[in-house]
Image (cartoon, rainbow over all chains, first blue to last red; front, side, top):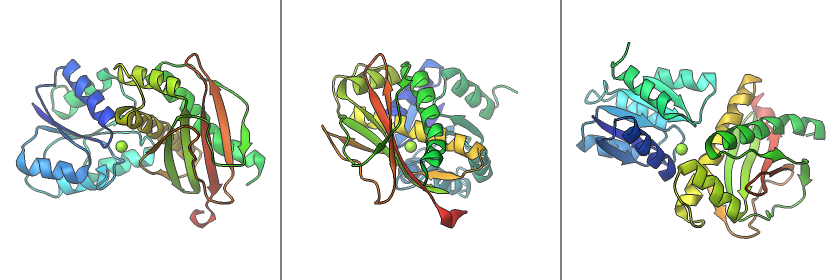
Length: 124
Length: 162
Ligand SMILES: [Mg+2]
């Protein structure tokens, strides 16, 4: 499974990558620092799952999700948002924009694993 | 903004700091006495700063001495940290982001909507954190087994968003 992790924090990208490896999803991980960079990566690479932050400079996660969802090329790729934005109205905003599942930072490996299994249809 | 109101505005940041640092950095901070601050200097070595807009405007800063920053980031990332470099600064920024995000949620539960910016990190002995004129800054010192650190909350309610 090929996953792209999008986060402006290099620390967070490293933590997410290490977590993905630990929970068995570390085969192929692409990275981007913001939504714009992620769109560039996606234009040349197919991915099975997008894991994106919300608060990022240049292009934030919400804008990125809307762009992904409006492009027929990858509008069915599952998206998990991993963010510090934990207010109820923010979660609703993200889900409306096309996010499939939501993880609040800080998160445990178990939570990320469950959310991935849920969006990939590996568990009902 | 009255002193009493200030404390109400500050408490969510205190709770968020204690919660996030104990969860991700395994440190148990003990809060000291709140102080109203007159100038913008910080006697710490590294600060993560996040701008706040919405129903209140200002910033929150999380400041550490070098040793505490190194311990906190080592615990957070699970990697050995030797000094304050770009990676350490990035991690401090992300911790500040988590604290601001958590505080934002606590405010939202009280019906106060805030927006938070991406973090900025300032490194250097006795650096300054600027806050707009007329914005009171409250310093909350913390003690921990890894040394003392502080958060600074600089906020004024934003009437135009009422
Ligand atoms: Mg971010």
